[in-house]
Each structure stands twice: as C-alpha cells, then as structure tokens.
Image 1 (cartoon, rainbow, N blue to C red):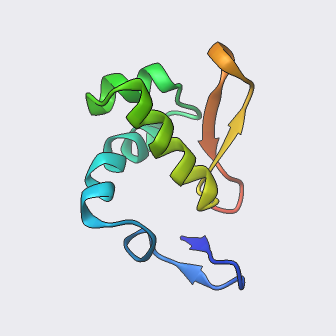
Image 2 (image 1 turned 30 degrees about the vertical axis):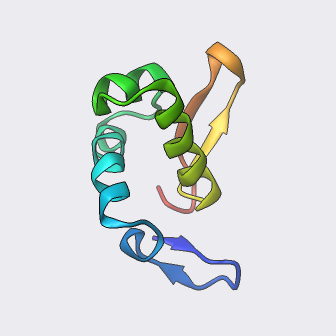
Length: 84
C-alpha cells in the first residue's frame, strides 16, 4: 500500500500498469527476504538495463514505496517504514 497526495491508501495495481508491475515484481519479492537492494542486484533480478532499473526505482521512490539511501555506487533502496 502507498498513499496518494491526499493521504489515501492505494494498491500497487492502482499506481502502476500491469507491465510495470511485472517488471517490479522480482525487486519487491527480493525485498521480502532482504533489507535492501542495489541497482546492480535489481538489474540481475529483472534482466533490465541500468537505465530501466533507475526508472523503476524512481517510480517506486516517487510512489513512497521505497526510499533511497546513499549516492552513486553506494546507493541502496529499502522499503519505507510506512510500507514495511
């Protein structure tokens, strides 16, 4: 669940298209058993390019599902406290 700009709960299917959910699913499944994920791990999980993975992370962060820590090569992503 995530909240929209008005603070209303939303399901992932209300935020993302079915195709986007298919691309996001391996990352979200990985985060069920791991605290964080890196862009490289996400590339390995999804088979997508670095650019595509950056876009996926940007969508997840914008939706309030993930939060980013660090920068450049040290960047990690984790489930936000309100979604954990």
